[in-house]
Amino acid sequence: MSDIAVNAELNCEGLNCPLPILKTKKAMDGLGSGEILKMTATDPGSVNDMDSWSKRTGNEVVSHTEDGGVHTYVIRKK
Image 1 (cartoon, one colour):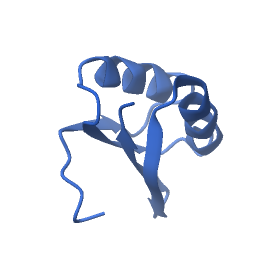
Image 2 (image 1 turned 180 degrees about the horizontal axis):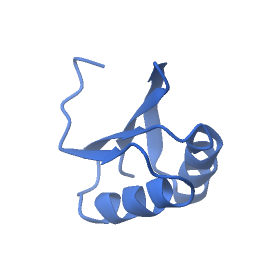
Image 3 (image 1 turned 120 degrees about the vertical axis):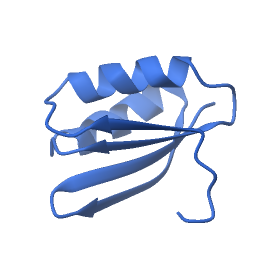
Image 4 (image 1 turned 135 degrees about the vertical axis):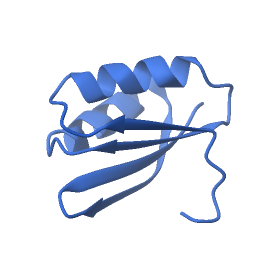
């Protein structure tokens, strides 16, 4: 992930569904095509939510890691 230039970061730690997805959508709306958002969340439900959301919107989850209960997503806008 260190070789990917991030254009924006979003901290959704401590928020539960559906807030991480809603805030991610709003952040992505502010980015241009091909730009990258790094989002962190502690809600374990965010894993399935991000998968469904990315398939529905066409935005690409470039990577997903989990460390100590914190999920980090790197998302490329379509």
